[in-house]
Image 1 (cartoon, protein in one colour):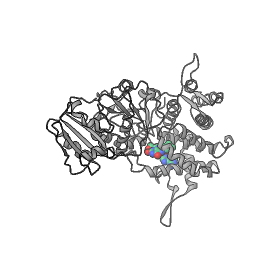
Image 2: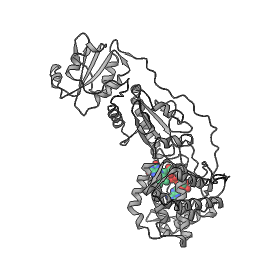
Image 3: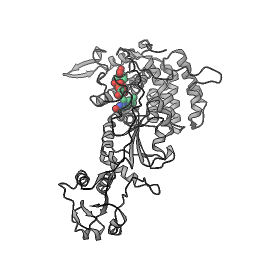
Image 4: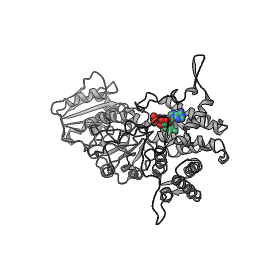
Length: 518
Ligand code: FAD
């Protein structure tokens, strides 16, 4: 099952990294590393976890040459370290060559969908990029030449050499080579179909196909039912005299801190909780923004717009409103289009020389957004809640507004620039680009966000990111708002006027409760 605080558990065939083990593991290592930096609250990370786990199982045997690891950037203890490694969105895959020196040496790996095969091939391609610093445990992956094969048994003290004949674009030979790397008394090399002399010598007519050469000079085609990785590997591992080497894989010590489980905080679904909203502010401004060591161009603008609507519309407790106004002022005074986070930090943590620090809480407490497991709900839930609230507040303070798109535009900019769930951001941007500019009034803005959120709910209903105790419904459900629903010609229709009335009541200051705030 899932561990208390992340998406992976010590039983998974990969290394669970932490703030104190990341650098010592992946830097100056004799093996390469591929690390998934994730956030446990990110739905796409939840969705990707089974793929990553399956990949880890698939290439377990390669670990002397390349290790797979994971680090949860949502874990407060790891947040700074994720910043140091340049992680700004989730999930991010980074490949570290063997003997990498610095966090910046990690190369971002594009992961095309959920294909284990593509990820495996990408690992091979990256392993091949090692030049002088080839990982010592990694066998040669380049195609064998006639000369190498001719002298093979003179220069290598093994009984068997398996030759895999294949076309240039095939990964089979390299996969089997890596599958066999822990086995002694045997070597595997790929031979390209263009290597005519060898093709002729062994009478090869099919690609892929494979041949076994034995030290005593005999050779024969490897008899397999299918010319495929698992069949080759199965055959080769059972050859007499072939044994598995003494390599012991890196195990994750089960050092998870045994935290007492977070107490369940009973919440009423018809209420909005200030604890969620303040937690969203803290996380959005101090954790998500802090991932960028420098803000430039678009991001500077997005942050200013976001804070400006917060300062204007957030119906917070007086000290929180003061905090937001002072952040807003501080940002307005920053005229540069290039702001290092160190400069922002003073403003965002509200530290003034000689004064008591930060008034806005420095941690998160989920109430209405508490999930039945730590990786459900939480931050994304609170972000939706915050923006619904802001669109509704804009309808109550029309004279303060600058136009119907003020809040939605700020949300769009924030999500695009900072929201760590990058695939969520892409989806949201798709919806925004399609229809946001058709919004003509602040009322329509509140309804636009409501209807797009319901689209997201519909898309995610029944997927693994759904908290079973909080199924994704079209919202508000009939029990919360009977008049919102009606039936015309036996089809369900929303009464938009009723929905708008409901949104205005639900996301009104009078419906925000202070339970669990300090
Ligand atoms: P949420 O959907 O987070 O809703 C929070 C609360 O808002 C609910 O409890 C309810 O009180 C209220 N609410 C629900 N629906 C509405 C509505 N229509 N109008 C007004 N209020 C409503 N996850 C993915 O896996 N893939 C994605 O592509 C994705 N895109 C996202 C894009 C954005 C901009 C955001 C903020 C989040 C996205 N998420 C995505 C996360 C996902 O939408 C949920 O936030 C998350 O799964 C938590 O769900 P939840 O059950 O807590 O309810």
